[in-house]
Length: 250
Image (cartoon, rainbow, N blue to C red; front, side, top):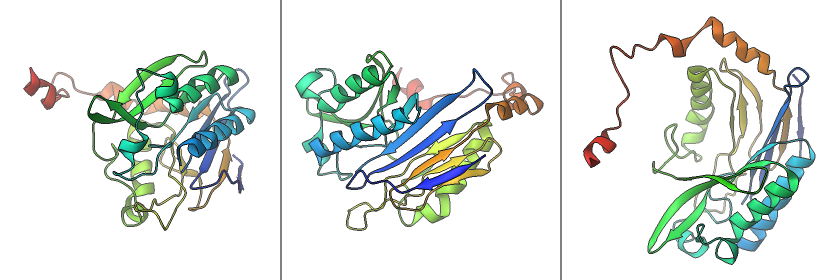
């Protein structure tokens, strides 16, 4: 594996993590994770970052949470968009749709504030390489699914630790993005975008400044999961996963 760290500037709080996934011939897959920090400018930054990732071979491009807005509660109502209406009512998703089709990439659009009537949602949209909206998910948990928001306090303790744990638990590569650090913001992100292998090893990481990471990943390593078949060892006859909230709502 080779890793190169190159400085890059998209302005503001932007950072792009680009991971090139290379395997045997016919099994190459590239993924680019773009992280960005005022609305028109943010959309322009995101578009540039997506184009940069695609130019380096990325076929799947990921943006960070709330990429089109300052990460502050008082900003969300100002930057919220009507995703279902589309067009001028949602310039962020309009850009994602256009870029995904033009570049032939799939874009997981991080999330943006979505307005539905008098309600606001933290919503992720996925656009296929044909420019069509293929999935939309409104965030349920207040903080991240791994545990908590990663700021200057929890970041040093848990950021890398939880990524390595999730990679090991699920025997998968885990790529995580953080906004580049802005000490003047109300929420100061930890930074340190990281790529972790399926056995919990850190393959590539950054500091807190803007950067691009390029790393080679061998998918054949995932074949080793057959020697540790955790998914096949579940005892469905003894226990099952239950969504208590869904049961209570019935």
